[in-house]
Amino acid sequence: MEHRTILGLFAVAIALLSGQALFAESAAQRPNVVLFLVDDLGVMDTSVPMLADENGKPKRYPLNDFYRTPNLERLAAQGIRFSHFYAMNVCSPTRVSILTGQNAVRHHTTNWINPDQNNAGPFGAADWNWEGLTSRDVTLPRLLQQAGYRTIHVGKGHFGPRHAEGADPTNLGFDVNVGGASIGAPGSYYGAKNFGHGIANNRAAVPHLEKYHGTDTFLTEALTLEAKAHVAAAVEDRKPFFLYFAHYAVHAPFNSDPRFADNYRDSGMPEEAQAFATLVEGMDKSLGDVLAHLESLGVAENTLILFVGDNGSDAPLGHEHSVASAAPLRGKKGAHYEGGMRVPFVAAWAKPQSNHALQQRLPIAANTLQGQLAAVFDLFPTVLALCDVAAPPDHPIDGVRLDRLLSGQADESRPEEFLMHYPHGPHRSSYFTCYRQGDWKLIYHYLPSEASEHSHYQLYNLASDPFEQRNLAESEGEQLRRMTRAMLAALERHGAQWPRDEDGKPLEPKLP
Image (cartoon, rainbow, N blue to C red; front, side):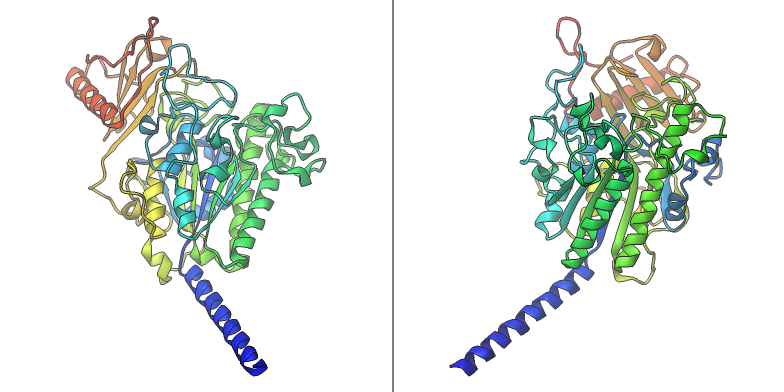
């Protein structure tokens, strides 16, 4: 009897070890994904040139020489960057779009979410989705979690107001949440100030980082340490992982990161702009630390890096409708110009190996600039396809897989359009819709103002006028009517909600 028991225990042990080996093999055959999301980082806020010259090659501008992002330069050299990658013009809509694969017009979180009060605006869409994401929504992390992934959220959430389910990312499919809450900005970046705990702006305090309180640890560094620890735990547990690493940087307040302040003292730039640049460089150090960590854990070959900003630049340079913060582009965060919604996007394997089986599933061109249009909601189907995970058939997806574009080729099957709808105000730009189709861009203003050049319409050809200096709405009447009809059709397809007039009636767009 004892002999049989020992044999039985031995058989169980062998089975367990075999199961662990099979699971380890399975984990090694499944890609890890790091989505590195930076708050308020516009397309011109790094040292990596994202804009193209007339030959489609990267072209440097003065802002590229002001910022220092050597790790992003390295990532771009081993992967592909996009010159026309779009996000929504403020943060919460983009974040919900990334998690759902839907345009904000469809998911109806069309404004940033104020944690404590509905901020639709005096003429804003009354039924917009201020509540944000809920536990019932189909999300990227939930689908990956159900497929066996360790889903890790580190940093800024901003998926729902303080009282709602979306305030806690673990309600949305994340196994782990460090730092995520209803807040859109930190009370402080300084550990010495407890990241906002105990100060006047306590309602913007960053949670879950008590171990760093009272220390000299900068918020960007604290979040990086936490991200590394949770990735290491997933690797130790032989689990494929999805790391959604959403930095609070480079959002205001522009607290200077003392580790990098000396690099900008003699730049001739305003003090706030120097502080902003330190936040950018600190974010870049974090990227380099994550890449080195993946290498040290032996999982760099298996890990896809997706680096992206969540809306246009908020660099403290110039007026929101001028050429300054995103120069040579016009506008900044919140605006209807390209500087308000064009963001950096770089994709690369953490350690490229062309003959690696996982990387052959999604080949990524090296040191390449992709000029075709794409947007943040395209990440959802791209990641799911790479991880061999299906979305429910009844979940509408506006995104289109990026596979062909990531390989450096053109994809003629993709729609060359982008719809950005903001039925809210007051903001830097208020109550507007942008619609891009090919080289043409239409901006429709529901309530004409000085910012809209006293007209409902602005029309630009981005091929001949990439910096939006010549409004063609009057001279190109037929093109204006064609674009307006196409915009109306796109808004209808997505179920748009409308701003309201003084009597509360919906303000639907008018044909010219």
